[in-house]
Image (cartoon, rainbow, N blue to C red; front, top):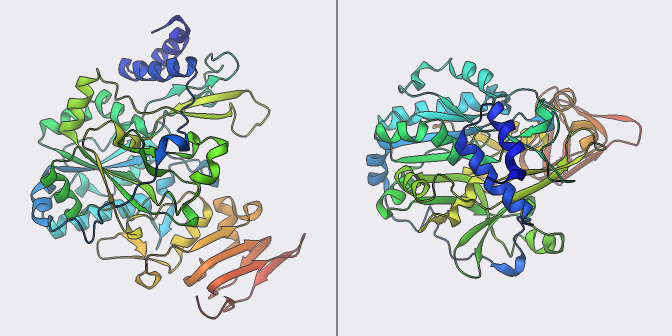
Length: 463
């Protein structure tokens, strides 16, 4: 570690961060000092085509999946607070479908898997310091989850880096610290002792996904494919649509090998190509399958530092104060491991395996009849949607926060089953039994509130 990094190391040690986390962060800090931007130019990549389809191209691997299931663990990323929606606790505790929270549904999904297969698949959360207490209290309602393993392990914390001078941001409060991205998963598995404990107990494979993606359940066919082919790492991708154009996409380096490009890795001049969802046709669902033995071997070979690509996020020190100093948050993405595991692959899955919540617009869609719970407690698009997600565009001036959404939809979501695109502008409150079809738009006059009457029908007569 260089002298320039010494203040960062001292701050992290004072906070109790482990040495491996400090060494890992040092790697990215030194890249930043050397001028690295983390950008992945369009000229260096090409589109991915011809991926195998999980439903039609893998063959029947269910028997292998069933055999691998007792050696499989489910890991959910649970560090998010949902602050963008006005939440102050774990986003996974938000009621999302039929009065059940994300964590309720995850617990029920694993119970359904156990009842169907007879295998007790453990659940592990990667929590942050802010989400741990409430999340573990919520899971205490499900004693059947006890597999003799801790229910969680903690994500690390790293200092924000001042753009001016590349020194640690001042202050000991939370605003001076940030998580190092969900690529920290691999480091946290080691420093918490979880990776060693899992392997000692005979667990070989991990299915990792976001806690807010209720379509991400254990698929025996994909698990069996992973086991039969001996793949060290497998990423589930889905077809991009216009609604996904700002999210990360899968690509292939011109020099060879799959790579994940996130929006923060895209230069302004490449934005048009990045958002061309017909050119870059697959997005990362963040549903990942990892061979834990392969992960341990790779970490050993790299002295514990996996070497994921740098993501340099420029922000303000205080997210709610645009006048506060500019900082870099140095992060990594766990899906970026697709380029560090030799022999890693990707598989195309249906949209049914991707139902996340990033904003209140997503939440309203999930509340609605456009999404349903199946027998395995997975929340996915209703069959009538034929795999096409409904696009909900709510005016952020009136619907950004959870409380705003609840006040303006006091009777719950309108019917969106036959809706392609719902756009709401202005201060609009929805009555009971409203039905939206096709391209529906409702707009309140400037400075006035509007109420959609009970039983109203919005939009074209056919989707």
